[in-house]
Amino acid sequence: EVQLVESGGGLVQPGGSLRLSCAASGFSFSNYWMQWVRQVPGKGLEWVSRINGDGSHTAYADSVKGRFIVSRDNAKNTLYLQMSSLTPEDTAIYYCARDYGAAGVYWGQGDLVTVSS
Amino acid sequence: QSALTQPASVSGSPGQSITISCTGTSSDVGGYNYVSWYQQHPGKAPKVLIYEVTNRPSGVSNRFSGSKSGNTASLTISGLQAEDEADYYCSSYTSRTTVVFGGGTKLTVL
Image 1: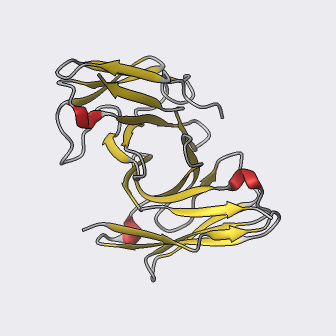
Image 2: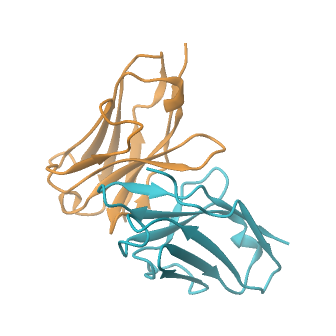
């Protein structure tokens, strides 16, 4: 069974940094693109970032480019999102998803990041 | 990257069919067969219904179907059921190698 479990979220001050993790199990992690999607509670989905199986190709939304870095450790079956220079507009639930054809086919339960002083 | 355009809301009665549109440009929806549709119930993670325009993952009801014409993709739900009441989102791969979502459509089952 495919499982994705996000962790690392919480309260952070504006200008601060946070690293999210997504632990994957139930599939051959290194064979799949992965992506991060976020959602402000009560609002729509916003795509954040995408990374290929060996980590050599990444893409970012304009809203996070230069501030967020996606990476992965295939030995640990874990996806990461390093977030820096955070602003209140980054407050959202962050989901990781296994990617197929640029679609999120399996999703984690989400992790809330709150940027506030 | 501008969000794809979806109607804010649609409604239908049980048993009816409804269609949700998703309009983009030739740089996203019209340029690639990488359009996906998601269903999201309150407090839950999104669930994929359709990927690559028309493909339905195993376990998804065949009442859900996808199509595309030009720069507009569509999700059709036939035989509407009360449990279909949810938010629906489309997404597409883009020429910038990014992904863009639609603004979402709230489906109300009357």
